[in-house]
Length: 152
Image (cartoon, rainbow, N blue to C red; front, side, top):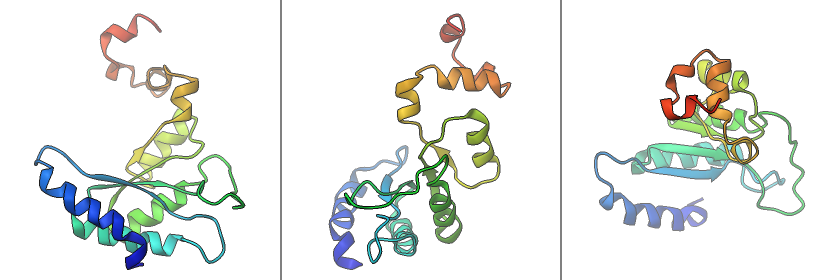
C-alpha cells in the first residue's frame, strides 16, 4: 500500500504545517474501485487509520468512477456502508455521498451514526433550495437564514 498512497502522504506532509488550529484537513477517498483485485474497503479502512495518525480530520468517502469496466451497484445510499465501516473501524469522522436525495434518508444516516456528514452534489445542482425545503420537512426551518425564508 505504501507506494499507492505515497503521493497523498507527501501532499499531506506539505499541507499540515500550513494548517492553523481553526482549520481542518479533509481527504476524499474512493473506498473501492469495484474491480476484483483492485482497491477495496479493507485497504480504505487501513488508509483511513494512517490518515488519522497523520492528522487528517475528515474522510469524505466515495467509491468507483475510476475504472471504465467496473460494475457499480448504483442504488440510493449505495456508498453509505463504506463510510459506516471506515467510521467504525478507524474512528475517523466520515462523510458520504451517492444518491442521497431525501431529507429523511439523510437524517436517518446521521441519527444512526452511519456517517457524520452528508455531502450533496448533484442533488444541489438539480434543486438548489433543497436544504431550505429539507429543513422545513424536518421541522427545522428556523436554521435557514432569514433572507431566504421569504422565497419559500
